[in-house]
Length: 150
Image 1 (spheres, rainbow, N blue to C red):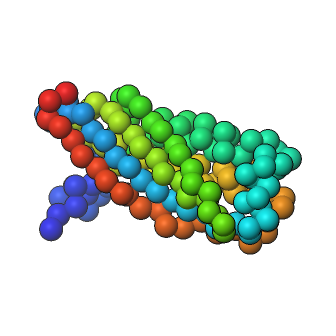
Image 2 (cartoon, rainbow, N blue to C red):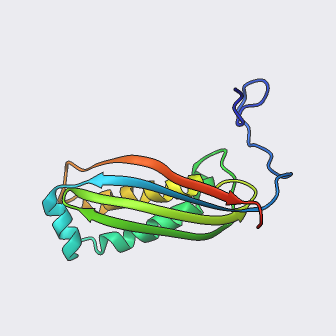
């Protein structure tokens, strides 16, 4: 099995996608952040002193998806058509689910994953003053697809 991001000498390289056709691509990803139940209650009530945790995390996730190629060295910059960041509050944490849609020659899963990670990190940042035992995990791609008709 050969790795696409390595040349024949083993050096890192960006894959040439110029010959690939444009296609509509979609991906969904998730991440979770475990919080103390009291912290979840503060988030739910809008009582975190830094502000609206979920609103800030949503904007951060969207912004991160747009900057994915700046963060991941061999990732192509792609045209994003839509990014959504949604949250489900649990008794002991918050689940983040993202969706990204784009029309390009490659990509979209890294954008969805980056959005999920940064949204979770933003929740961490917003809540760190009141919860010293938070943990982030469960980062994974849920689904990706493409249609050849762009």
